[in-house]
Length: 253
Image (tube, rainbow, N blue to C red):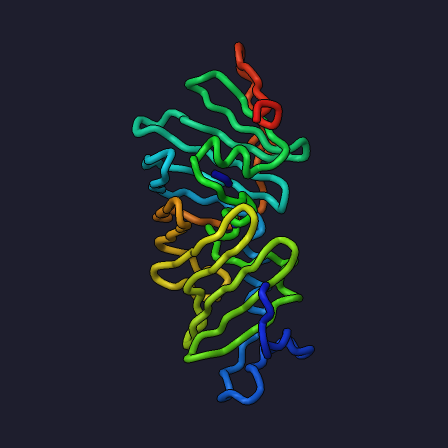
């Protein structure tokens, strides 16, 4: 589940003026404003997303409709549904940590790391924070100030390399649009692609998204994506249900 460097060579960081500059010695690149990335990141800080997803992995294969609610960095709700509309799984994350409810089993799973619940939920290894950013095609704000850039054959490559892993966004020009993302981290090593590419104007919404690794693929078709300034607080907490068992996955590894 859940719910998103190697040396950059001669790449240079953002210029103080806020414009990304091309690597010296290569043909000039068109101006690229850092503000475009920040506007998009800020706009999609709180949102609701409805989509269909198909997961194909070594341990699971299924198609489902889903809804994701995101508020800030720490509040996430990810719910999947059966064809007749009943909830098949509910993941929530709040100030107390993440939890996963499987109604058919009458059990709530907990774990310290969201990725542990994502494997239980979706059968794939995928960072929840990466997934929520992939849905909106936005770059995490804490990465914006340390991006390094390259420009080659009409494509910008924006690179972030930190202890959290290597992230490279590919952006085409005229108009600027995010084509995809390459990730190498402890939790996920693979590729994200957008069809069609997502324009950088803040309101632009992805169409189809494909996530893939060497062991699994996930295809997402968005039905609705909307910035939502307010949610009911209860949306990010588990419902009070009778006869529910609680299982700590960290204790049964």
